[in-house]
Length: 140
Image (cartoon, rainbow, N blue to C red; front, side, top):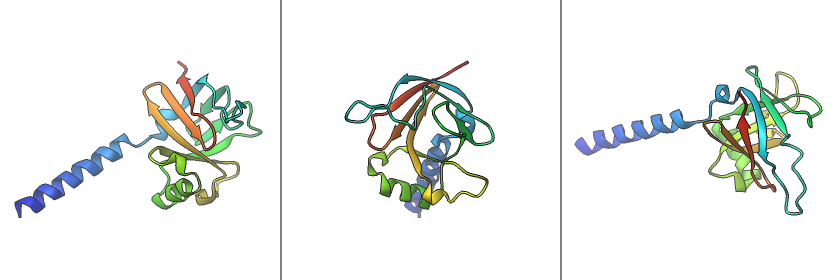
């Protein structure tokens, strides 16, 4: 019985800790400056990561190289994240951020742009399949 309780408490603590470490869209809100561009194997820059990005509180990602602001979603449902990683296995183990153009109704399981992301303080890493990671620094 004690083992069961210990196991249950350990599982709860680990689940709570992993939830606390999950990427928070509020932490992304603000302006970000590119520090290191994403490039493909030929050295060409990735069109999905701009020189400057702005994440807004209403869930939009704005960049000069995008025709319109994109909607973004961090911490997608497990099934949506699994579908994204199945399409782009090199993003496995990273936080997943989905992006799409469109209105309020987006089928996130079919999001055309999938980023692997990592946020450490004021440093944001964004990875698109087929490209090196792009590094951003949050502007004050």
